[in-house]
Every structure is written in C-alpha cells, then in structure tokens.
Image (tube, rainbow, N blue to C red):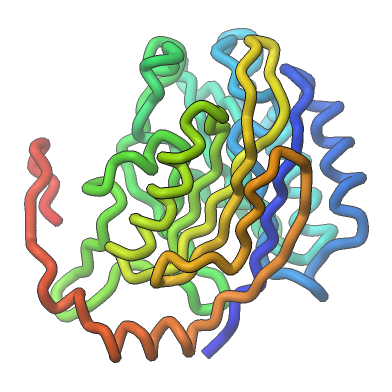
Length: 271
C-alpha cells in the first residue's frame, strides 16, 4: 500500500496572461518536487483566470504554452502536475483539465458541467467522458469546478464484482467568494457519500470582471474531515498525505457502499 503526498496550490491569477501566471507559479513552487510530493494541484484555468474569451485565449494542445509548461514542470519536479486550461480542438473549445506526468505523458478531462450563469455553456463545449487516473495506487476521478454540484456525475460506479470505482476525487476551481459556503459543504459531501478523500483547489484574488475568490482550498478525508483547510483569501502552498491503509480500513469498518442504490442516467449510461 502507498501513501499519496498531495500539494494544494492556492494562488491569485493574472488576467489572460499565461506567461505571467506560469512564471509566478514556478517562482512560488520553488524547489518543490518528487522528494516532497507526488501531486501538485493548480486551480481551474490557472493560466488565464476564468475567461469566457475562448476564441482569443484557447490554444491547440500541442501549441498551448500552459500545457507545455505543465509537462515541463512535471518532468522537472518528478511528480504529477495538474490544472485546467482553455483548449481548442477540431473547432470546439474546452475547459480541459490536464494531468501531466513526470514521464512526459498526459491525460485529459474536459469539463462536463458548464457554468451557464457566466455563459460558459455558450463559449465552451461540454465534455462527455468521466476520466480516472492512477497515482501511487490511488484511482482518482477528475472534475472541474461546477461539476462538484452534480453528485450523479461524480458518484461511485463500480463494475461487476468491484466495490469502488475510484479512491479519491479531485476538483480544481475558480469558485467565487459569494458561494464559498456551498463549495466547502459540497467538497465534504462528495467525500462522505463516495467514501473517499476529496482534493479541492480554488483561487484567490479578483478577476477582470470584478469577481472575488475566497480560496477555501481543502483536502478532506473519507469522512469529510479536513487534512488541509485554509479558510482565508491569501495564497498558500501546503502538502498533506493521503493514507491508503486508513482508507481501506475505514471502507471495511464502515461498508456503507453495500447499501448503495443502483441507478441509470437519463441518457442511458448505466451506473
């Protein structure tokens, strides 16, 4: 069994300035790397802020400055580095979470639920596939911001003969301060109902639209109890360890999964 050292990076972002944001983040991360952590988590749209200027700011994967920087940092620091960026592909625009590995490979998840109150559904295309990655023996379900409000999309859906589909849930966000209470509660609720740790990373500061972000990045365990909880609106970098042995022991001691309901999504995808 392995432990997973997880680093939350809560930061302010320069509006629509990928070079400045990547430079700032690299300076803040300092020498942090594989000797201290296995996973570095950045906020949603870490290179630009939550921009709806998708036509101007999105870049193809292989030309994206932010994606290239993620891969460079993962290789340099010998750990996984992840965060979401604006990507254009085949004429469609995506808010894409990129999971960059130290061997140079990448896995991507396109945000499923687009925040219509900001017009995101008019500027970006919806993702269709759930994505689970594996790191240090933890299967991790990827999600982005507004996804957190939709428990069916994030619910454990084990296959035949399995008890769990994943072992941790990751959510990167630009979640505004006026809705900080739901952010905090939903992170804990997703942990409790899925019997797994939840990693939630949000930004701080104010964007060009005057929207303020309170941070509240959290790492909560399988009971929704905080391992990292920073209810403050300042930048920080903090690392905590997820124990696979403790997770497995709790799932065995408190097997609520045995009483879970089976269900089918409206579009015919069975869970």
